[in-house]
Amino acid sequence: MRVQVVVVKSAQTGRFLAYCPSVAGSSVTAPTEQEAVERVRHEIRRTLSMPLTPPAGARVAAVEIAG
Image (cartoon, rainbow, N blue to C red; front, side, top):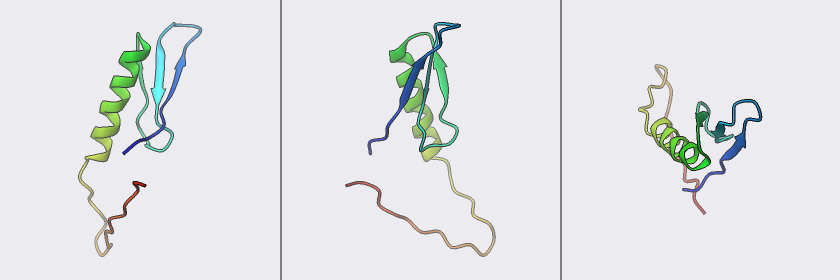
């Protein structure tokens, strides 16, 4: 799966902020752009691999997003 990641360098701190707009909670900071991209990749994988606990009575469906 490919997702778009936004990387921005802070003018105030010089650190890099990276986040994936389509994955909530994927915002990270790092001293270098490369490290920010690696950290956000890890955060996206972690977020997407979290077990789903639906409310009682809810139905869970799987959808394909590739291609």
